[in-house]
Length: 130
Image 1 (cartoon, rainbow, N blue to C red):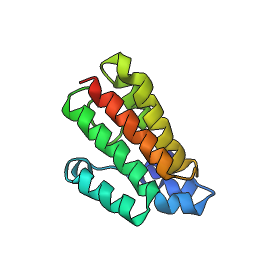
Image 2 (cartoon, helix red, strand yellow; image 1 turned 90 degrees about the vertical axis):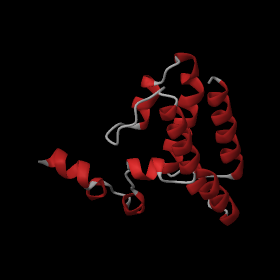
Image 3 (cartoon, one colour; image 1 turned 180 degrees about the vertical axis):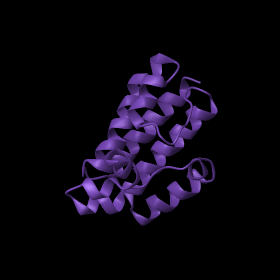
């Protein structure tokens, strides 16, 4: 019962209420129904680098899912995608991209323009492997 509640409402178990309010589950609709280029441009124009970090990660996840390098499932964690990624040679840059996303999203790290640029570089490095 506790596990079920935690899966449905993880914010109830967080001490930092700010993190709890920011929790979002990625749906398949969101992954495939978003114009990432436009949304990313809008986020950067607003100076919302936190949103940009999330969008870059999700865009990369969609691209590698489209290439069938991972199988997108809403119940998977970002780390599971790292271990699932084929080809294995692209795991190090994808792990770095994932770690940045996790640190900003859940670790209260500050998102900066430089961090967004670093993520874009990692994204390009991953996609060059295609």
